[in-house]
Image (cartoon, rainbow, N blue to C red; front, side, top):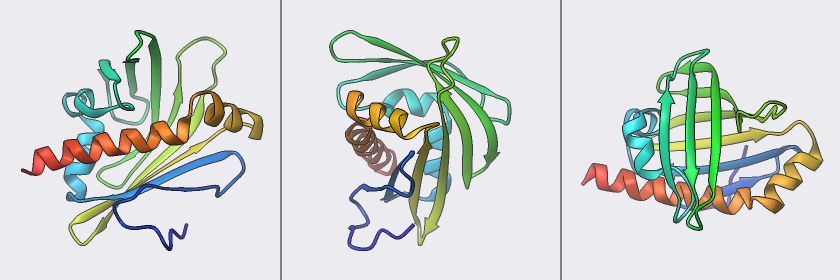
Length: 165
């Protein structure tokens, strides 16, 4: 994926596929720290989610077949249950998982997160692949997935900056 014209600090979205949402940003932190902050429940609870959200982690077992269950609490008091099942974990390079609400019948979507070293900084790319174009469009429109993803990346950048200070 080419992100020409985007500054290294600005998030970028690309429609690599009409069923995909892709977000990418270079974080000013070493790859090992970025990976750890993305996969350790003590870190994740401090930054995960869009502006105003908090996250309660119930379990986080980052290994193939492992499960991460958490609840995102919105500023207006709505709770969003989440379940992630990891399929591939290559520390500190790559995560592949299915993300759903955990409800029966919710197949969720597939995600691939890559962590690429760029001279002491880290390019994190999150690819979300939905089963259909309509599903992708629904999530983008109704849940503002792209904007919420940018906000989550902003919070992550702020958290990493605090950790580096």
